[in-house]
Length: 310
Image (cartoon, rainbow, N blue to C red; front, side, top):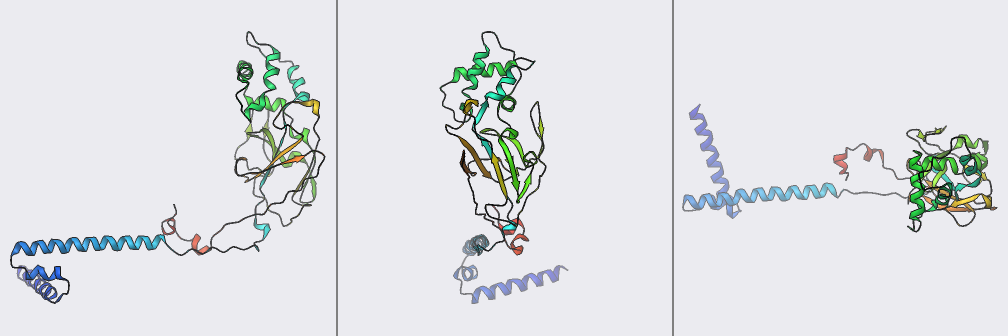
C-alpha cells in the first residue's frame, strides 16, 4: 500500500510539473523554475492567495447577479373590480360631547364622586376643552387636569366617558343602503375608538371585541367584502341626521358636517386614510380608484431566499 501511494504521489508531482512548465501563468511556472526552495514556497503562497481572491471575487459577482434579477412590472387598468376588497369607511361626528347625552349622565342615580376642592362646574368646564385630546394646544392644562382627577376618582377612563356623553351611531344614522338594499345601520356600523373620539365604522375588521365597562360591540361581518357593482348608487349610502347647534359642548370641527375616513379594513384610520368632510344639507358622492399589486404564480412559488426578500 505504501508503494502504491508513493507511485500515486509521484505521478501527481510529475503532472503538476508538466502543467506548470507549459502554463502561461508566470506565478505557477515560477513554482518549479525558481532556483531555491524558499523562492518556490513564496511563489506557491502567492498562487494560493491569488486563487482564494479569485474565488471570492467570483462569489461576489454571483451574488450581485442574483440580486439583480430582471423584474417586469405590468400596469393595466383592465383588472376586474370585483376582485378588489371593499375598504373600511369610518365616520366621525363633530361633537365630542353632546348636551342631550350629558344631562342624563349627570342626573343618573349613581352620581359622580367629586374630590375635595372640585365641583360639578369643574367637570363641565373640563368637558368643554376635550378638543385638546385631538388637537392639543396646551392652553387649558388646568381644566383638563381637574377633569382627569374627577375621572380617576370615579375609576373611569376617557373612552368610557366618551361612550356615555358622545353621540352614538344610532343618534347619527337615519338610513343605510348597501349594494342597493336597505340595511339596518346597527348591523353595518359599529363604534370604534379613534384619535377623533368614538366613531362609527363600516367593514372594519375587529380581531377581538372592543369593550368598555358598559357595552360590547361585535361586527356582524368580519370578512373581506367584494362587489360586482360600482357607481354612486351602489356599495354604500348613508343618510345622516343634521347637527343641533345647541347640542354642541365640545367639537373637533368649527363648522357643521361629518368627517369621513376611508382606510384599509385591518388597520385603524391613520395618515394614509382618505379623509374628507361631508357638509350638512348636501349630498356628497365619493369615488375611489382601487389599486392591486400582485405577482405571477412563478414568482410566488419561489422561496424567500431565492426572491431575496428584504
